[in-house]
Length: 629
Image (spheres, rainbow, N blue to C red):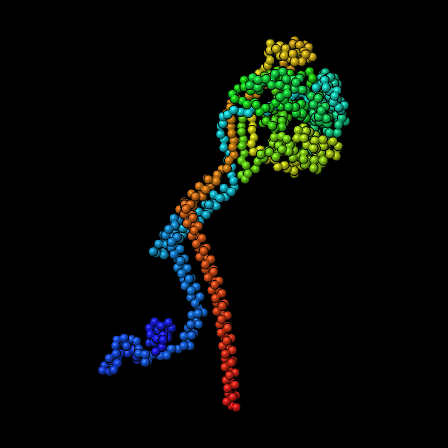
């Protein structure tokens, strides 16, 4: 018999279910035999399995075709099985995630028995996720806006004493007037009070206006004309007339600044000629502890500051006490309009600007100034922009402040466009040791250019980027005063003055008969901290990173019930989905390659069959021709 006959053969022709098919076996073989016949003695197995006598022969051509097909489709069958397995794995993946995740609602969607129940849970889950996305967008937008809040607290500590700057109300001493320029002396001569006669206002007398005496001041200098050219004024005041007294003061300042710094310093009041007493917390201080700063409005000013000035107890006894002799006999009568001094209290290291931030101290008065400190700490980038002042101090040799920054910014633009700067800020360039400190505007062309720049700044056509300092100290002043000195105490002051300045003793003694005139020559001031408590303003993020994380976690937990670990479950689920997607993509790529190869094989078989058919046809023709022959 055939080697592969019997049940369970490897080919279709060998399998028993194929033997009983209509193709190989007549259906009568399956019917039971008649009684009494030879076939009735057959066994029961013969009823179902035909005898080998009627077994059809094996079709080897069909078997070869089956082998070829199984060989060609072997990879496809495996890939198909793998794809079915992956599809089953995807369902398992979804089912496992739904059963084990902590996300609310997913489990009910997976286990719902009715379609409408599953639809309701899907709808609720989508609504919750939508509100969660909206909530998260709101939180993220708030956090990325970087809002800032100011925290106010009350501190208590030993306090660093501020810098104190004092200026005389007289710019140039009368005894030093001869050292100044001719134009400056001429201006002072024109303003002498002896030139004015109040009796002219008696009815019937010759009336002459006070300001008419200053009509010829414009011939003294060109500064008044070009620093204030009407063509560079604001439109609202283009045709307005300037006050004559203001013109006198402005011309005086321009002539004063036109002189070299050495002349200006020499002509002004000196600290060693004015200081009668100085003490901090009961300990003496001396003129060498003061730093001279020359200002356009007040001439020589003097700043006292020290890192050793630490206030450990509040009150006047632990503060800075100063007594000055103001030298009223040296005042320029037509220029100086009042007695006393100018005082500014500012942060140590900053440049003093008493004309902008100072207060007046009256002569013949003792003034107490109580201080309260406000310490400001501003937030740094990325929340807000501020200037730490490190680079500014390295370049300009002084502490950063917005006022000083703006001055340098404006003058640097003037230097770049006009080649010079406003002479009002000579002292800034002197202290910063700037290489352009001698390039202040002098000619009419320079002054016109400078006026144009200043007008553009005034109209905000030019701007400066001067940020707030990151750290700043502000001092609140609470002054109080009393009449001082008494007539008896004036004698003690005269004694001290005569000991220090013997040459001026006789002049002071002559004023003993006029206590009022004597008292007007003295100023006493005491600066102290009222309390060691201080206000602290600290800018900080309104939404800290930890608070933002808490808000996000609360929003996610509120809407879909996820915790941090549960979020990682979702992350893992998406990673597995991505891995499955990669598998499907690779399967499709392999399948397309297999189909391409199969087509190539089929094309090869067709070509081979065509060649075989052509060869057979040629052989047949040759055979026919041979037979015919």
